[in-house]
Amino acid sequence: MKTGLVIGGVVVVLLTGGTWWSQSLQNSDPEILSRSGLHWHPMLEIYVRGEKVEIPQNVGVGPQYVAKPTYDASMQMTAMHTHEDIPVIHLEFPGLVREKDIVLGNFFRIWGKDMRSFGDTMRMTVNGEENTEYENYVMHDGDKIELRYE
Image 1 (cartoon, rainbow, N blue to C red):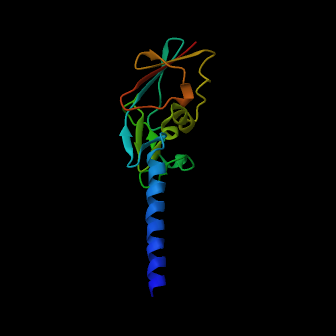
Image 2: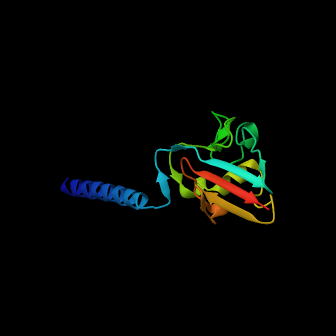
C-alpha cells in the first residue's frame, strides 16, 4: 500500500513538474506574440512608378483560399485578409500567434502575388521610416506600410 502511494506521489510530482517546465519553455519563446489570438489592422499601400496599385477587396476571403494557412472554414476566410476598407489588412488570428504568422510576405502569398514582381527596385517604409525587412517584416496594429517600385 505504501509503495503505491509513493509511486502515485512521484507520478503526480513528475506530471506537475513536466507541465510547469513545458509551459515555462513556451512562455519564454520570443516568437510567440499571443496565446489568445489577435485582431490587428496594418495598412498597405503600393506604388509603381508613382501610380497607386489597388489591392483587391476580399483577398483571403472565400472558398478558393481553403488551401491557404490558417483558413477558418466557418468564416470562409484566412486569418489574414482584406475587405472593402482597402488599404487595411485584417489580421484576425485565433489562439497561438507567432511572428512568422503575420509577416508581410504571407499577405502576398495569400494574394497570389510575388512581392518583387511590381518593379526592378523596391523601397519600403513603415510608419515613415525606411525598412528593409520586406517579406519578413512582422506587421503590427496601426502600421502604415508603403512599397514603392521603379
